[in-house]
Image (cartoon, rainbow, N blue to C red; front, side, top):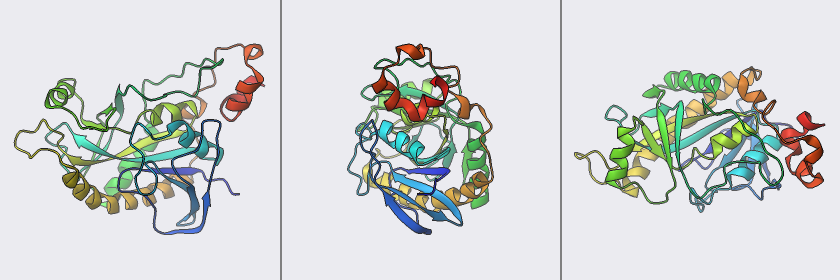
Length: 288
């Protein structure tokens, strides 16, 4: 089948993309298991894209249960070079109000039960991750959000918590004291795995609530989150369409596309046949 250059990972509330034509639902098996769901490959305004609902259609996977390794590997196997991640988040700052959008540029990892690398089991790689989001794609998302008429903020630190429970008040205040801007449950390990897969990755974060630090606001409830989330789904889809058109004409040029070039430190003669087969899609070009 044709290779899709652009991948879209839809978060809570974004389970499909209207307007796709020539749709093919692809069931991909990977060395890391099955992805969250079938990947929908189709043409969006003349551009071939691959769409994957992070939590599965019907939202049956918790953030911890999302098979991130399989998701990223499957998209890579379909030719994806750019991933737009759409994610629901809570705000840790007064000016980042519900229904606003944020394009974060930093991450703090507070997860504890997730596999966050393709490597191990006989192959060691240390990939640079100082800037966890692709700056080129982040710029495109920001410009697209402005064009779509969204209230968007560029930059900020995204705290990724394990979930599925929301924060305690003490935790929320602690994250604020760290200078963090937003909090969510899904940007990691996606961003780490995308970097290891040499894919340009950035997040379009949709603010649904003020977490629980904001004393003048009511306690965060799932009803509140879903209401605000649905209000942002339509504009998120518009932003994705605009961004896809910008990405389509671009060639990988930033450091994301060569992240593994000097990162694998295991001697090729020490890499087993099984490991070579498992990781060929990622490192084959570097160890042959």
